[in-house]
Amino acid sequence: MFHIVLIQPEIPPNTGNIIRLAANAGATLHLVKPLGFELTARAVRRAGLDYEELAPVRVHARLDACLEALGSARLFSIETSGTHPYSDARFQPGDALLFGAETRGLTTLALALVPPERQLMIPMRAGNRSLNLANAVALVIYEAWRQNDFAGARPVDIAAASLHGNRRD
Image 1 (spheres, helix red, strand yellow):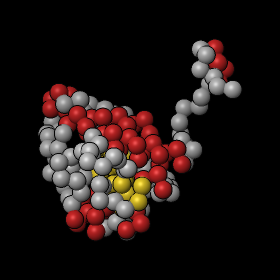
Image 2: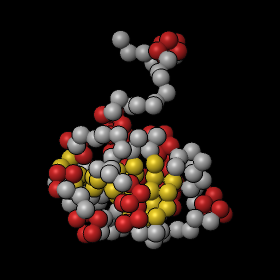
Image 3: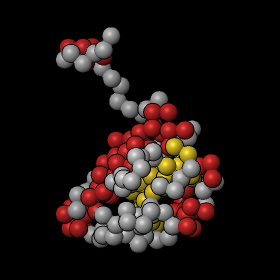
């Protein structure tokens, strides 16, 4: 439904968590090299990146190769310098959400590819460090999915939920 693009991710457990997020939200994950970790079978298992069978993960040598694979997808950047809260965006199936490296954020080149009205930020209290990358991706991908009525989600079994006291009337 959506594309999550990690440009030069550095921390393997973040990417592992994002693979799981992509699987649960029905998104495709795109990793743009250079990566801060190896993708060998052994390194992937050790780093907790072994969810690839759950979600499509595509690795691209360069940003331009990733953009070519995305075709006509609308690009949204999520960066501390963004000018619009992510919750104000109106997401559509097929949109691509761009996130930068944990220690550097998005490159100037990547930001230049995104129209100003789609340069998003996550509101935070002044003086705090930015959110963990996996948490930032979770906020935005679930908002995008929510706006699209959680298309493809497992139906909620109301009768079963009421048996367990989870139903709200």
